[in-house]
Length: 121
Image 1 (cartoon, rainbow, N blue to C red):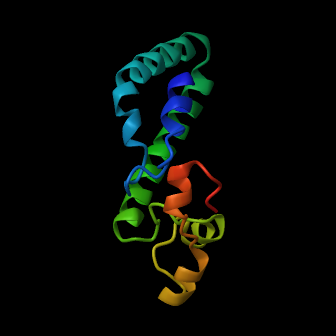
Image 2 (cartoon, rainbow, N blue to C red):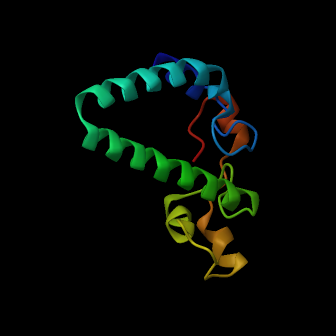
């Protein structure tokens, strides 16, 4: 949690326009080992809970791949996404609104204020 907090405190929280948190890559090895221990523990304790956790992980992997595709076609904006915009594109195959409506739902941060550590929304 400390690592997540430290890397999330960078003034440029959107990390230059990528989808996901590239800065977490260095932590994946440790997280994979902890996940393996957790799954081993569940396997020894409760099969139904293990199956439920694996199904949840499967859905989250699917969601990540689906939203990566949406980010590539600019349905998920790298720094200007709002809750309203996210709700409109969540698990959608086709946009049911115009480009102008889409732009109105986005909220671009003030980069200069973000760099200075000020409130930028």
